[in-house]
Every structure is written in C-alpha cells, then in structure tokens.
Length: 266
Image 1 (cartoon, rainbow, N blue to C red):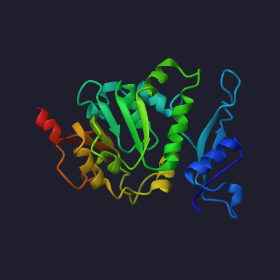
Image 2: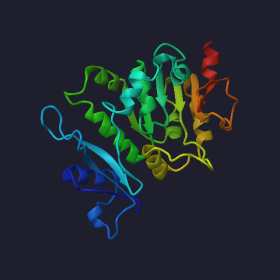
Image 3: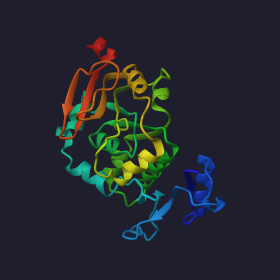
C-alpha cells in the first residue's frame, strides 16, 4: 500500500477524504504506509488572526516532512513578488498576447499557474493525480479565509482547478484557450543534487511522464496561439513537431510551438 489517510487531526475531514479518494485510513493497516495524507498544523503559525487553528492538508513520507501547498506565504508568493514579472523567461514564453487564457496541463504543485494568474491571466489548472489535486484544492480553499490579502484573493479568482488527465481533457473537443503550458516530469539524471521535497513527493506519486508526446499532440489541437513546453536546458525537445522558437534561462528551456489555429488566424 503506497498511501493512506491519517486521522491525527480533523478526523471527520479525514474520513471524507478517504472515501473520496478510495484510500484506507492508517488505523486500518497492519503496517505503516510509505506515505500518509492528513491535516498538519504549522507550529510556527498554529492559528489565524481570529484564533482558529490553521490546518493544511499535507503529504508525509519517510523521505521528508510535511509537503503542502501554500499560495499565501512562502516560496510561491515570494516568487510572485520578486520573480521578475513579465520580464522573466517563463512569462515571456506564455504571454502570446495581453493576459491570455492559459491551460496549465501539468499543474503539479501549482507554482507556475500561480505566476500566470499573478500576471493577470485566466488559468485552468489540470492535475491528474488525485492526491496532488487534493493538495491544490485545499490550498485554494484556504485562500478564501478573511485573513487572505486582497491581492492574493484576486489572483485566486483567476484560477480554476480540474482533476483530469490533460490529454483526455484537451481531446474532448469543446476546450478553448490561448496557450497550453506543459511541464512534463524531467528525464532522470545520472548525477544530480537532491531534489526538493516537493519534487520528491511528485516523483513518488506520479513517476516519470510516459505520455508527453500524446499531451503535446492534444495541446496543439486546442491552443489558439501557442503551446509552451518546459524542458531542462540541454534536453532534447519532445518527440513531435520541431519548436518554432525557444526561450532559455540558466537551467531551463521553454520550447514554443505555434499552433495551426494561430497560423490560420494570422
């Protein structure tokens, strides 16, 4: 058994989540699971300003402490404030027009999608892992608290979460957007520094992406302007059409594909 739900805090919500995800509770297992999902209270910030307990849905494993998503404080908000705005390579890659509607087809922990929304874009987050989608949903729900700064709440209003396989979702035929953004799980390196705990959790849950080619093909049929694929700087492009352009940063490259729909409209 890979993962189970812990009842340590908020048992009623834990039971509901276990039912929704079809996962067992830890008390039902004979041996400890490799990973646990449950609500965690940050000892440094145990309460909100109104005195209520501040619980975050978090993933626990034997490899790390709690892994959770926070759009209000921490790295994501710091990146939004000091990441370079529209001049950063990521922003230049996706801004095919002023404030496009972006589908983030590989939402993951929501960092890039939050940047897009912070730039004023409408963003649809698509995440196929039910566990990661639950972490995202919890983080989005927490931003509805009255304590949340108004600018963060305005950003979150531009973000929509859909739990689905992105290739299947994009192939439905009724999907419209300006840009599709894809960040497939990077190829495994023989020598690398230890990955951040968020990335370790992602790798444990979803493994490597084996269907990136299928996702690219589906994205090219939907995006009105372009498809953007994030890659390691020295990695080969995904199998398929040759990128029309590339934007590079020190360790990352963004491959840009002008879609057929964009060519027709121009």
